[in-house]
Amino acid sequence: VLVLRANTDVLFDRLTERGYNEKKRSENLEAEIMQVVLDEARESYALEIVQEVPSNTVEELESNAERCQVWVEQWVANNS
Image (cartoon, rainbow, N blue to C red):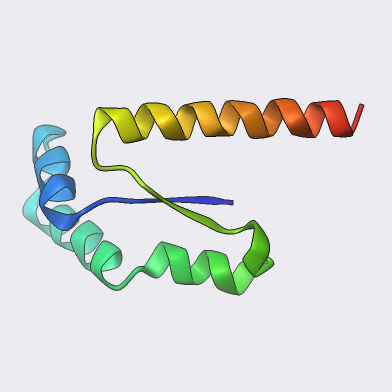
């Protein structure tokens, strides 16, 4: 389970660029500050499979995508 995390200033800019209204931006920023998604993932899944990964830059996004691809390929190889 991957939980993508972003600094609130980065997240604010992304949400603004996407045209999110003030209420929606505030809800998303509060959820990030309170790490709601991370806590829910940790409560719902075994801790060893929950991975918190930064998602602030294009490089981090690309690295996360590559990591997912490797994990999927490994899972397929192990379960075929």
